[in-house]
Length: 89
Image (tube, rainbow, N blue to C red):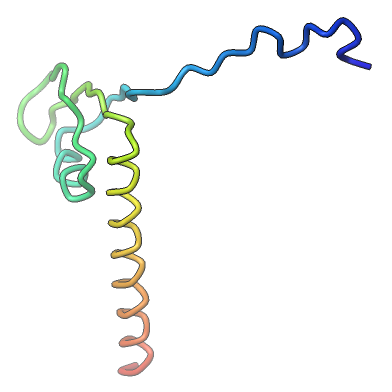
């Protein structure tokens, strides 16, 4: 019914995402480095721990796969810690 004209989706195009821009507190760089998801810092305002940064993160399959590995590692560590807590507690 909605596509009687045959035009719905005719000009549909997908644009692959190659990067994400964001604003963050400078101390977050340590977290991003730990996750292997380090942005290209495009600008910074302020000093040291109070600085605010603007950055561009790459979006690639390699980055996605690396982050997935980190999440799995952390899940394994969290599960082991929980088992230990129940065993000790």
